[in-house]
Image (cartoon, rainbow, N blue to C red; front, side, top):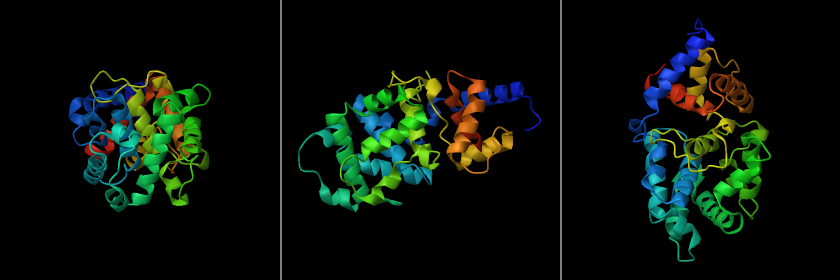
Length: 257
């Protein structure tokens, strides 16, 4: 594939985007969790929580994410905002990999604080994106998210590009909520952020595919690799660069490229 010209490579990736960016993609992907909802706040809260635990086997991710939704009575926003007795035993007993009940409990408190005092997730990210790049916005979001007293261990579950992280999970959530694909997959709910500012949700699969295609040379899947890959993908499509996440991920995970 390295022998392809830039024009040929763009055409190939555009073809793969159209192949994978379709409703059939939803069922086996973590984005299927927020697709269970119609209320805007339910969509964005479930997207945030699902993205937070999106590492490992997709089937396991879906099982854990559905468990989170069930604990919240299948109404995430109502659960977070209403002062009723929460099933503390179920919250404390939840775990998926290194994300446990201690982390989940704080995430619920932090989200409540954001919706009560910061205007909600969309407002936080939109306000930050007017000044910063999306990667810097993620770093600033982390500061807001952890402004309440919190367990130190929980900080690792919100990535920070300033410390070198690719922030794959938050970039994936932002793709879901900001990008409008007209295919019924990504939601396009957050209108105040331009999709052109989004960054690729870089993980081992998309990274390895990008290297095989010759559009990424950096060996680590870190913040610098995101910047490098973003620069190429924005040349291919400056308006909607993260649409290529479908191509890179689909080639790597589904087609074993």
